[in-house]
Image (cartoon, rainbow, N blue to C red; front, side, top):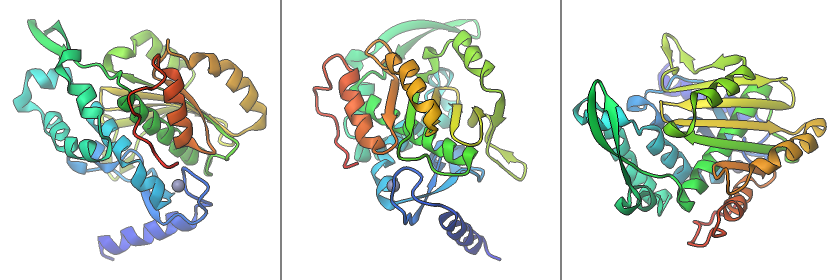
Length: 295
Ligand SMILES: [Zn+2]
């Protein structure tokens, strides 16, 4: 059987096995969502696994957030120092078109040189001057929060075998390379005993994407995803009645201007909840024109 035919059979099977869209209550999803997206892999060479039934509106509308996640995941200070060796730098340049088209404002926030700070780093015995670009702009936060919510819902679907209920809660927190200390990473891992990666034949995703996880396989999942060496996303998702209130109580206070990359949103309208949260989490209330999404 040809590869194209196999792919289309697999697509049909994924769609038939789904109760609804992985991200919303649309009962008739027609497209396949790849989480993480193919573009996040070197030469788009993505091992299979983690393909989900998705409605076309969720799939299309969140393209910008996928592109922003790709852009930041590819950032690598060592590559910037030796650009000729860097496939990641090329991949970053390639994805800027999609970011510009589907996540307007993000490039300006990330690459506005006035917001760059100069610092010195030591690599292989030499001191280099590097620019540290801050991912603190409102558009950037919106897209990384939304990508994180997608990652949370997709991992819930993967580990429990069903879509996260509409009564559910999604807690997310993302880190860029410098933001996640060894201690925090170790603390996360101590409660996440499982490790998962995409695998297809001898091809595995480990260096590019892996997931540390803990779950009752029923109605709660906790995951830490690593996307290359620069983007880390922690998510807790639940729709278990016994977990919802205690989690809201425990995690609610974490979502504040003090921790700008945290987010706690409802599974019934995740994209609207993300925009609402972005507004309330930022000191200026999100003034400055958040790119609006329908959902
Ligand atoms: Zn949907």
